[in-house]
Image (cartoon, rainbow, N blue to C red):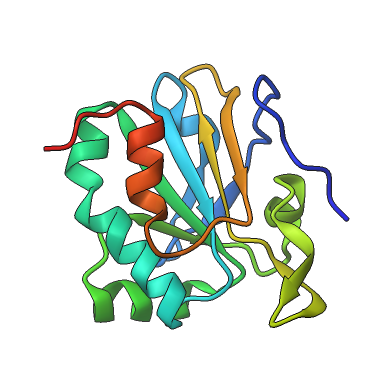
Length: 158
């Protein structure tokens, strides 16, 4: 079981390919706040709902100084399909090796329909301008989660 991050921890840096195969690095966001969210799989109902919610609120989040990066174990080709099919505007990166998912405590044992399975734990980590964890939310729900993050961060609704 990977260690869960706590507020104040340094967010593990990563460099992963986005939907176009371009390397995206957390270090490139230094000086900006970043919401890094982890989801199990592109093109699935819950993950689509969550990605669409982030896309729908991207302007609001960006206006408050937050960038959004979605991380899943998918390959760039699948992420591109997901982005294009759903008209997503959030940055999606793939972590097929699951190293970043594990470093963030977003991969491990979880309950799925009453059974214990190993997989991606739907999580959201808010990283501040200095690369420190501001908030670490694990086992979040796909539906309503983005609205809760916005409320928790004190961002006034548009």
